[in-house]
Length: 313
Image (cartoon, rainbow, N blue to C red; front, side, top):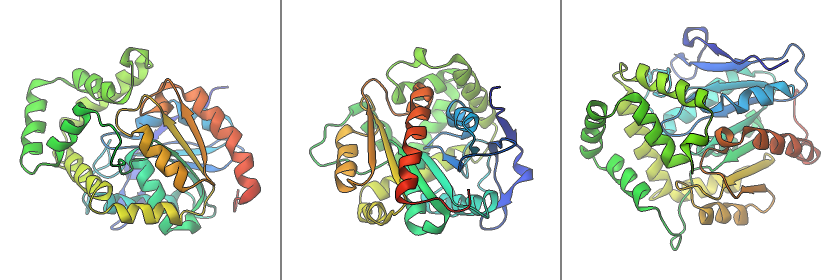
């Protein structure tokens, strides 16, 4: 029987500093036989980014949570901003609330991968394992860059310019076109994605047009993340070095946002991490080939637990 993937209303969950409500998707098998997974989306994403991988992890016996970070999806940034620091606080509170008696396996993509690394480094008592898929990381000096991606982030980073660009996009581009344009930055072929995924993201984009905090949240998150990838990169590298949980690093070789050279640098720095590269995939392998990603996570878990047994499964 397929896993049932349900949304949990934000009002049903209260956690983090100030008791902030968090909107999330959740599945708990009647008799869980695997770990508790907490899946963390990237910049501009939401829990919907895990709508294909989540049920597959749940079908294998794991409990799965996919929260919307503060300012993203349907989680309002009540009492906080959408910066990396504030969302790290929210993520820690979320994990403590949904899994108070056992450590979790964090599964993070892009900015969510960065957050997952930071939480695993700063609160190792919460994390039994780590799966990071194209985590945002500093680009090596000599690595080639994509001009369109560089221009996109330059606009977001520039004070005033990012605000004007987002207002203009909202006037000129409808939600369906916005989602396709965003996906085109992330995957080699948008038309190869599951149409239901595109439809769900389009509906969410339509709902977010009515949320006054949405543009500010995107800019807060992007600007704080760029600081960690640039001027404050040492903080991120120290976190990478500090992670003690078994870690699976995943990356699509056709990723335009996180370079192959960047992922190779992370893999070389942490040779104890398991590294899996996908020749034909882009920035969001869990949406492009969820069967393969789920199989790789399932194959990695037993080996990971031989080196660091999970607590409280």
